[in-house]
Amino acid sequence: MRTVFLIYTGGTIGMVKNPRTGTLEPLDFDNVRQHVPELSELDYRIRSYQFQPPIDSSDMRPTHWAQLVNIIARHYDEVDGFVILHGTDTMAYTASALSFMLEGLGKPVILTGSQLPIGVLRTDGKENLINAIELAAACDGSGRPLVPEVCVCFGDQLLRGNRSTKASAERFDAFASYNFPPLATIGINIHYNRADILRPDPTKPFAPHTELDNSVIAITLFPGIRPQIIEHVFEMPDVRGIILRTYGSGNAPQQPWLLNAIACATEAGRVVVNITQCDAGAVEMGLYETGSQLRKAGVVSGGDMTIECATTKLMYLLGQGLPSETVRRLMGEALAGEISEK
Image (cartoon, rainbow, N blue to C red; front, side, top):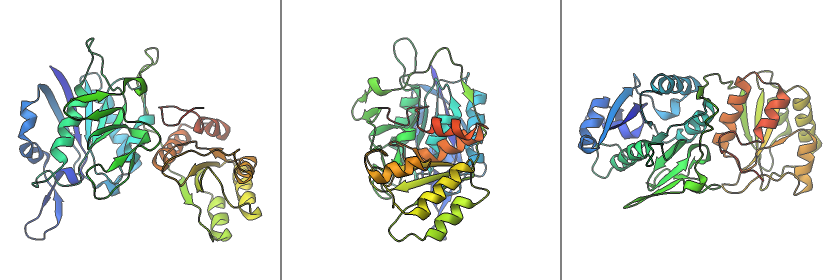
């Protein structure tokens, strides 16, 4: 019998309506199990851990990611896979962060949640939870896990965690992966996209990391953005990494104040990463003159990374105490399948 470790952090999936106030409040994890009696019918051993108190995903912080890594590392050799119940608002950030922090991962870590509380009639929570457990326990004929990655299971898709983003606040298919295909599609049967699933390197052991540096900021460019704001942010002494969300394939205004701010930040050892504001597509800084100017000023291409992925990857690399040049180089390389290599 395969064993799945269930970690309940909080979020809508574990909420219940207070009959007095009408607001949603977290319920005890034992009650979550009571609302899903189907769990007892699964042919898996399910162990569990609950955050106390449960946290709303909008309150998720890097310290919580470190807590998740420590829990997974502590039980890694005892179970076959992990399911993390998480609020939807920051699920893609957590999935992205864990994909880097769990270096050498060889077992499934599946994040899921719901748009409606698990105790209401039309909830999507039951299906998402049961599917996530099935995927976390799935193995081939030799007992090897089918999806040894950090993933997001939501609706009828299993997505690579660091490729996922929350795309809708209302639909049951709330998450999308615009630049990478699903790792599995869920219907009457589960169909795996085996060619795109990462496989662990048997020569590299599982190595959990908990060090992150959150001295990172993301800036979205828009027509009319004030130079003083850019200059102030780029000169802030507590900022070590800057995500610059540019137009199209990585374009930005060809204004001296912007290029000078970037050049000064780079000379000061700060890492500036260029990602596109578009949902789909990638930064190609040599395609237009505007992108080439950014590259000359020291900006690193983030390729087709999501904002969630670029932010957490930069936190992770800065937290490893690496030189700025090494961080710049690694931001452009795939560490956990997060960026498409040409």
